[in-house]
Length: 248
Image (cartoon, rainbow, N blue to C red; front, side, top):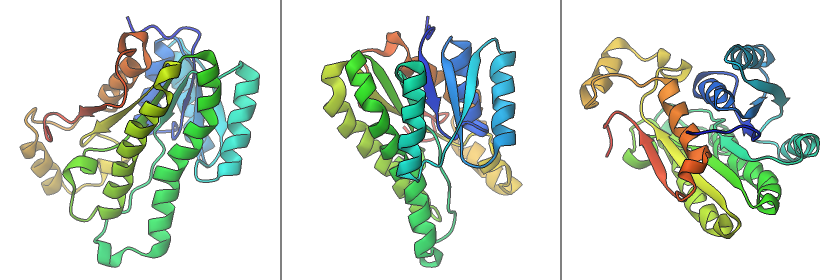
């Protein structure tokens, strides 16, 4: 089950956290994984090492998702080298955690450029070869706060909510060519982004989560592998919530 042998996958923001777990899981399922990173080549190289240690194959693909020219250039080179792209995981993202009154225009623009525009640029660069092959998977990594909201995360939550609109609309555009587009909405996952939470806040999150714990990146990755597989071929335009029951 969930066999991805022969598939070429791009994972944006694959150098750490959820992106790293997704890269390893896709590789373990047989995909050749192109690990995207913007500046932290050392961390991306560690992801590649883990991919290879898991018996998979991959390579690094450095570009800034917020730069459309960089996206087009890097993905075109990847398509030419591998004769197409089968799976795109739009995982790259940044977070601004503060009240809206304190958010600067620059912070707003940077968040949307990465979280929303970056996903659009990458999807646009990949859909033509997917449609030509009549097979493709686009998976957008959103967040629980896109649907539940969260005080102090207006900018981040709104950007992740935009990914849900992208998912549903693009799914309708490309379905006739056997390309599916879905989203995964993680809850609170044990990553760098949540590592600095005060203990009281962490315990509060656990108390609100029916399964009584923080999630693991590998649990999000498992949902992505499923959505990328042939077993999920009749699923498109959907949001898979990996949140321990915190938001249903």
